[in-house]
Length: 282
Ligand code: NAP
Image 1 (cartoon, rainbow, N blue to C red):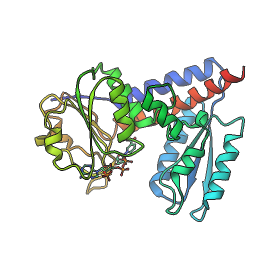
Image 2 (image 1 turned 90 degrees about the horizontal axis):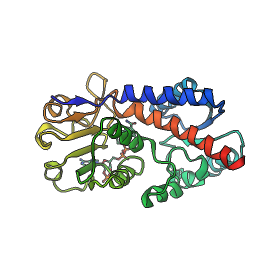
Image 3 (image 1 turned 60 degrees about the horizontal axis):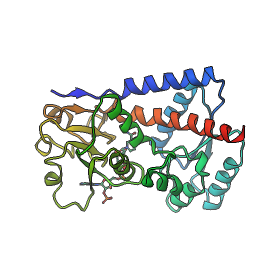
């Protein structure tokens, strides 16, 4: 039976440390979140981020834009927040309504306020191994490896999913720790073959139980990023937890694994943005 990688507990630890830091150093970080359109799941994510901000002592401002928002209006709001001295971090919740260009919007967010790490400048920094803002989900996963002393050097890591927000930055993070990295996607010919001798698997697909016990080697470390609903409407991941946890050495649960760490690292990035901006000014 595998060891459960308890992201919920680690996230609480990180948030508590941040709260202590904010209080002790009398910091006044602020996060501005743009929610454009009426995606129901996004509203829940934003609410969770708002609660976490409250807990840590980060001021939270929400900007609600209707479905009919134009690209110009969205960019105008980003410009306004870029120029607002009080705002340390800007987060544009995805998805945004069809017809709007999210990449252009991410690129418009000032790199020093880009707490999601999606601006091409920060993407580039991660790629060349320089300090910048690392996207919160892969960053949170790296903190889990660190907490549980999971050594990645020379390990064969296979990521399933190549999105800009999870799969690709995850590959850079694993490379930076000297893992040998493979990225699979929907056009991968034989997923089972790619996974069969992986020491570490990161599943970020969005398809329930796409990773089953027969695909995983004995002792593998399994990170499940997926957030899906089962037939009873309960949250579940991309990994068939019951089967895979019997073979894995370590495994993240869903819920309680990667999800809470994503939010904790967002809090971390906002506090970091605040400190960096103020250091520059002093
Ligand atoms: P995404 O943008 O939809 O990307 C999904 C990836 O999976 C794509 O690269 C796609 O390949 C690949 N894929 C689809 N079917 C596949 C298959 N049969 N075999 C192999 N690869 C396949 O999704 P995302 O934003 O990265 O999110 C992935 C999942 O993680 C979702 O469930 C999302 O809700 C969850 N998520 C969780 C957190 C968290 O904090 N826990 C954060 C972010 C996302 P192509 O590129 O070829 O289409």
